[in-house]
Length: 139
Image (spheres, rainbow, N blue to C red):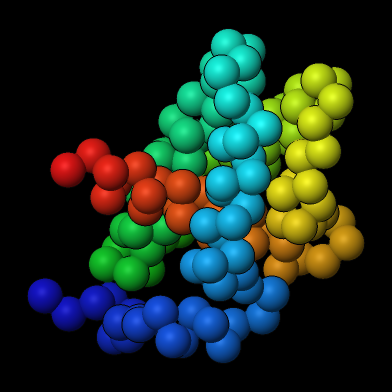
């Protein structure tokens, strides 16, 4: 089956895109996040909500390449809503961790979409990274 965009990608192409985080950078941010969450039940609940939203969002991203133009147009609003919800989940977790005297520096590294539109993409990329790690570990 040919990709509807007639283009498949390798990681090296991702690295050339504007505002990306490398896999190593995402691994470091994720480790920081998990260390700050620790065994805090409320933080774990917020993280679970984030992972659920990330799983949903990543399915939109994963399908984008194989969907027709019509399918993309039909699903674009839902994808945007899901991405917005995902950003809210990251923000809620960061706010909670800060209220517990944690730095949540990972959130600043992801950036604010109002400052730079590429930051919205970075947040989506990082969500997909979290899904990627969970998928690998679910073997």
